[in-house]
Image 1 (tube, one colour):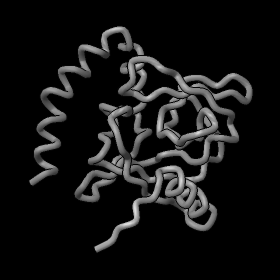
Image 2 (cartoon, one colour):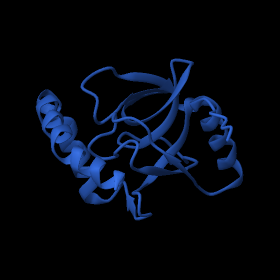
Image 3 (cartoon, one colour):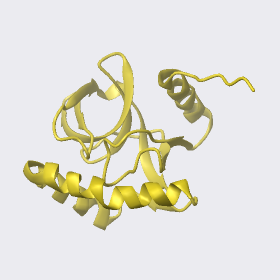
Length: 157
């Protein structure tokens, strides 16, 4: 059987086009840059066209003129938006507001269960996580060695 593997940018461009016709689109997330709030290669996000961009939003954005990321907005200065993955320890990214193509409203696990990203608990949790940035390296190392390994084993079953 022949398979065609499409580049991420091509797939995501199609997702963005679909958002013009559909109220939402589900996109599988790859990588671990959004740990612990979104588990890449295990969960998906439900994307919607954003009315506006706010600090704390998890967005799909075109950065550096060459790739898309699903990361959290950490600062807005006029038209300039600063992003960072929750699981990243550094490496902020920048884009313009017009480069924010979608907002993730829900995380969907492998069983189809949806979790809203902006409940009071999740917003507080993401703020606390940001405040813990100096010690996140340790927390993430423990998380990856324990909880993430358990989640990965469950998915493989």
